[in-house]
Image (cartoon, rainbow, N blue to C red; front, side, top):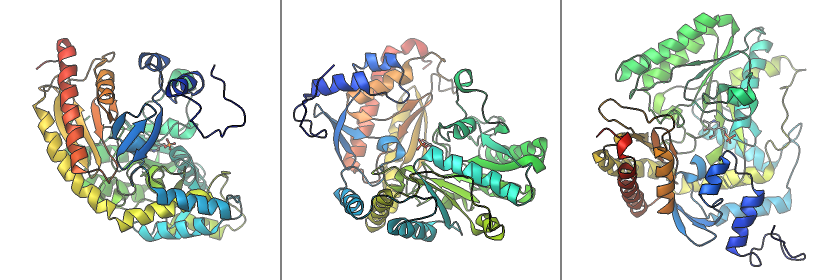
Length: 469
Ligand code: PLP
């Protein structure tokens, strides 16, 4: 164990060498979901020290391009001193009030600003601290509102296979990949339907027909469950976890109509999609529909502070104005935190002043154009995405769209090769993600593509026996 001298600032690393810091990280930090063998193989956890724009530096001063914006979070880029200043100023003025029955100036300004920029009439904001909490909040709003409207039996939630909605219990129950052995039984009343996927349709269909069938399936599921038992349908407008398949607008418009027809609330989870990630401020703008509830998090503050929210339309909130003695059965200590709200306000100001939504859209076109070059690789099947939410589909067999064997180490090896060459991203199953901050430069995009190209070549050489060329 490394001892720290007493009397020195806990924030100062001057008296701790980089290798001691690595050792302290290995001994005391619990990486959220990394298996221990990965920590050991990578010689510990990588400890980052600073960032600027789309770049990061670790404590050994190695430089990286952040090709995943942290975790689809840092839309405005790293090193925004002005956000730090806004937070410092607010914390000096007022650091905290409880969200139970009070609020604060920056929180009011933020709720007002969100109501202004959100599509349609999404305008009532329930603040919380992270995406999973936002999803839990949305679930509880849906169930309570249905009950207060006179439908207490409407408790079921329909989610989609391949989706990710978080890791708290309710949110995890909606998430497609969840560990039954450790955490089951999951929340009662959740069912999963096929996801819109034009690359590999569950129905063997191609193009928009695949998405239309996926939408029809949702209606069939509502009917099978019994519409009088269904509270809500939830989905990410474009799901990163499911592989960044961009659905046809018809899919979402059909889901809107289906939900309306059956008295079911529609929840759009924009935790990743929101705040310019997809080339619009919110992804629902691509698809021409307004959900009843929308969840936001991550880039609301570009990661400078933990903040999230569930935002609803007046007709959802309305029931609380009619049944005046009942509030939401929900309370989160850090909901609407003034310092986080100050961070969010400054972040939104930057996004607007620097036209980052438009910039991300433009640079996204350039990025996808460059990524097309990777399709020369025997393992790259296609490039998909919108704005700065992009994916490269990797396959073990292009002709048959073959999946990697369950125990294949190809994706993991590719991630490690990319990391070693200074490109931080995720390779999950069949997809290599390209989602840098919206401020990324053309040169940085070129560098990401060059590194990806090199690493694919190396990995394809190492795993030749698993690849059908
Ligand atoms: N919803 C979506 C679509 C997400 O992608 C995530 C996280 O990546 C969550 C919810 C959960 O957010 P958090 O990790 O902040 O709890």
